[in-house]
Amino acid sequence: MWGSEPLPRVAAPLREQATDRVRSAILDLRLRPGERLVERELTESLGVSRATVREVIRQLAAEGLVTVVPQRGAEVTKLSASDAADIYEMRASLEALAVRRFVQRAGNDQVRELRRAVNDIARSANRPNGEVGDHLEAKDRFYEVLMAGSASGPLQQTLAGLQARVRLLRATSLSAPGRPTQAAEELRAVVDAVEARDADAAADACVRHIRAAAATATDQLTA
Image (cartoon, rainbow, N blue to C red; front, side, top):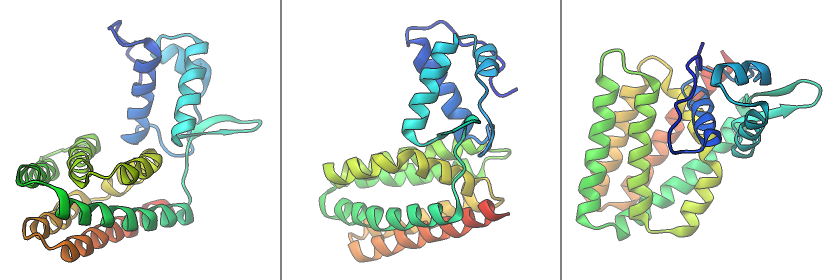
């Protein structure tokens, strides 16, 4: 069972702990798209009240990771291939702009930090028996550095609205055999162009990376 251990009693409120636990299970694909979230089962597995479980479901529904279906209840959001295509096209435009802004605005220390982040992605991809969650964490760090260096509040706010669905699709694509290694190489090309301060080449490499991810995710969604 994905959440069979009761939550530890630490400083963070139980609701936040429970939300983090269920969110991680969704993004690591231990809870699969379309799988029902039964209140009673969540209450027992997490060791929290039904009121807390309902708050968790409301929060994850607001993030787009959970869908509440009339007469059925809550289930893990299952994105259609057409929804995924739209999200990836939005990502391609927005992240290509973020890369351009990074080239224009980031300092040398931030460029070096981006290189370290992509090296971490490559190490995660090449780790024997690497988990999807490890790859996701490494990629999260890469995008944190990228967005900070882009120094664009509007871009960060717009992408934040897509974050949960983007991460769900990222988990889907990275679960395909060989995709983590391929993604690492694609992002290396982005960083190579960034280091050369070539905004056009960096943006083009970013778009190629996202379109490759889109093709992989679409194959996974339609399999």
